[in-house]
Length: 335
Image (tube, rainbow, N blue to C red):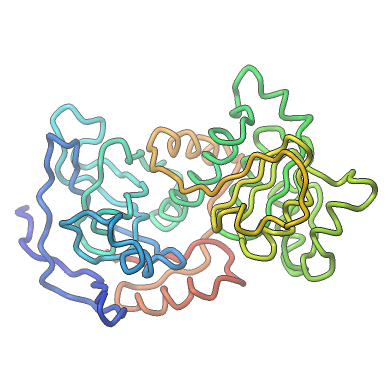
């Protein structure tokens, strides 16, 4: 079947910062020399605050980027390089870089290194709920903080580690908890609201701190510092991130995916803590490793809600709620 020349897409009017559906967006042509693939998109997913990125950081965007949002997607390969592992007809999912045109459209471009084969056990909604959140968690735990990867020869060393996750019930935090559990981390502490305590424990946390009932800084300093952890993974930022400094052991690691930790470092803090702000890099090989864990029943994606393409605004409104979400918000591109 011949490909259409134009397609429907969610268009982001950068000047007025609003969204609308357009029906004349060009279907892109993949450049096989750059390992590009054309993918027929089944589902996509918005990310909190993503509409601010092209406005606040235009210098990070590709010059030929069309302002179409959403960079998590699941779909079927339509065109691919002859020697690609993802030939036409292959069901795939991935995170495409936010510097390029997004995936809230019928046909999109994905680079071979970004792609992973979608497990048969996952539906389009579940697969689309994984890439950004799961890859962020994987890279922070195993690439950046030094924990041993599940199944590696040194994985037993993780038993002696204590990890604290703020925003543990959020879309990224829930993956950090699950992957830390799979990796055999000895003590997993989640920071969440009272309504999410049971949920976070079901993911694998040994302890859940109710952020409304207990001051995190006080918790970290209590009992002579016995609560302190080797690694803090912050998914909240702001004041909570500032309080995290009191929870890290000497020589420990503090990673945030929301703010630069030094910005919220208490003026009276004394100690040696490795700290940094982190943005994930799309890696299809890592995504396939996570998918293998999902297929084994060791962890799972969570979908908060699913919206038809014409309901895109409700999907974005839902994402901006920030609290109360129980997984990723999904937009169906194809019924």
